[in-house]
Amino acid sequence: QKLVGHTDWVSCVAYSPDGARIASGSRDKTIRLWDVISDKFSMILKGHTAWLTSVAWSPDGFKVASGSTDNTIRIWNSSTGDCDRIMKGHTNDVWSIVWSPNGMNIASGSYDRTVRLWNINTGDCCGVLKGHSGLVSSVAWSR
Image (tube, rainbow, N blue to C red; front, side, top):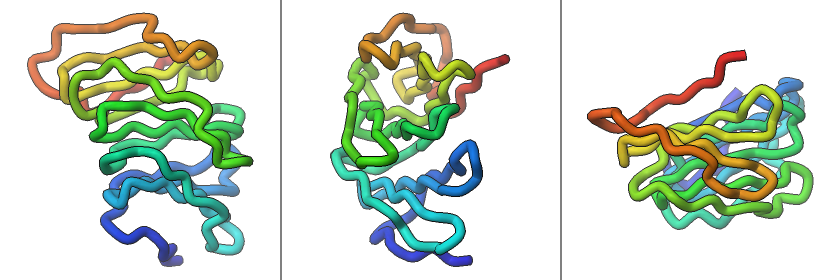
């Protein structure tokens, strides 16, 4: 099915853990949450000031994290659409984000050549991994 709604390129997509919803991020600076059964969007998440590069569902499906070329990571409540937290620290575009398996942390990769580890409860950066010679375009956790 074709999901219509964004007003610019879709740059990232992720299924919810239960497969019932999709989050899509776009160059239009929004995230849309879609219902897989009805093919309709259920809400639009607005707040980023530049295009989206990465979206990821929390393991429990209650939160959506987003990374953007505005250098921030945002945590959204997938039921209300509220932005619960804005995490700042990267000095260039955030290219990739991923939740830890336990849902307590996020790892982010950036054009600033770092990987940052974030505490979801506080929004604090709890670690910076340096040493890459170029942008970090993908991050992953092991189990």
